[in-house]
Length: 381
Ligand SMILES: [Zn+2]
Image (cartoon, rainbow, N blue to C red; front, side, top):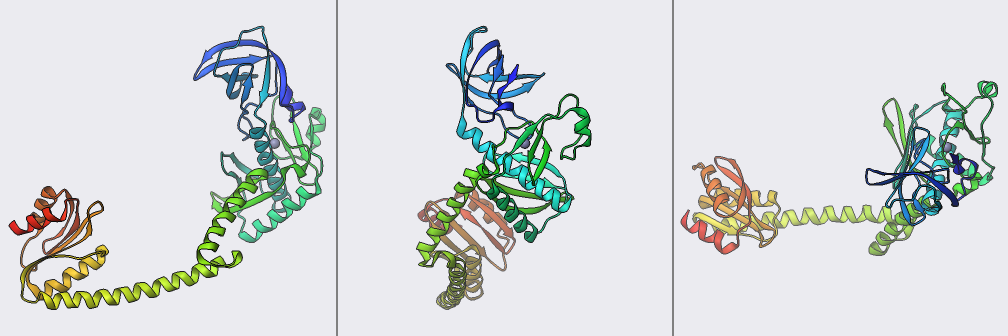
């Protein structure tokens, strides 16, 4: 079986003869005498596309054969036209090639190894055996992009065994059979079965997003090529929205958000002072009133508790405070210094579709019943 993608990673259309077709998990497993479909390998996901009238859903390397999982059966012996989904393949080639450049440059600079590579649907991650900090990451990103701009051609070779023995390359391990060496001159030389761009410039852009400690080294998140463009466009659009909303220049949104947060802190403090005044006024209003049921708008659970405390000290009975509304439910806080309120909590939760509880002298929770039912409950309890 001829693996056309090994010779030409830009080949998208080809004709091939169907060798076998058998029902498999989720479709029909088809083998061909030649294929441009890349099966998953070396961290690169499989290609998708079409084979004649059938859609190619997955491609796997199994027992030396490339197995195409198709959504329809194909007749063995017939010739079919294959078409690889090029947008998907080229995106994967950009990510994969970018990974070579970054791993190769990191290896040359710090002597660290790539110990993990994941090419996800959104992000690419590389695990290195050395810990890198933000400064090193910035250097690596600059260096990787300067390398891309040099646009040097990528070469693929299968050296003879004695030549291979003399060669220094990444992913060197005892392998049976021929070893495919992929070279990004000046950046990387690595044993790899994947598909790559023709020259470094086709990677377009390498954006390193984050670096985190991972095991005894680090994990780098990155995006390359069209993904990098989409990612940065998405981030720019978010910043544009913030810029518009805050009437701040695009490169001054950080400072504008800081000002907004400081302002918000001021409002919160003022709001807390007004709440305290309001609670003190209510406490005066209900002084000596005995058992009290109070509905108050827009209180946080903490403010509700403070209101309950304030009125409780003045009323001389049980104080039930509620805040919220229909739909969101009513938060409750009930206090009484001389009674065990826990049985009341149970009864209230059962009668008013609620949950919550607390200490003998103070219970807190939420009720889903409407205000009229809550008021009726407290008239009889
Ligand atoms: Zn590769």
